[in-house]
Length: 95
Image 1: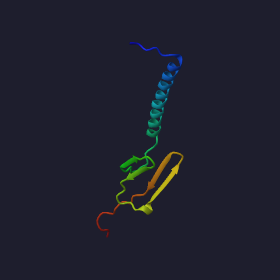
Image 2: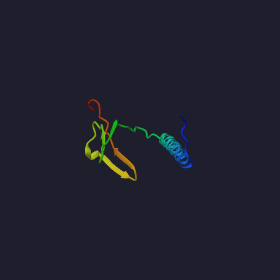
Image 3: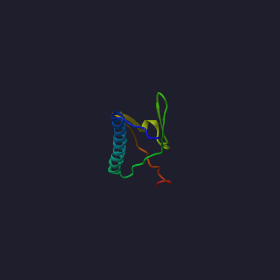
Image 4: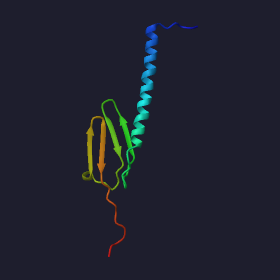
């Protein structure tokens, strides 16, 4: 059985397809922009877990060897930025 679709139905289908294509294009562009960000020598990216509930977004980051006073957190538009400095341990005794 073939169901007839009116002009309004075709417009909704085409709009849905266009929305999906724009979403995929946006994702590809965002990945390309992130890939072009130069890596800073000695930069470290720790493991991150994101969880979203009905009223909150929880960010968990493993930062061994970093104290809370060494961490800076900022939010600008829709970007969360977490910065800190991990001090290198000195090995052995120095004479």
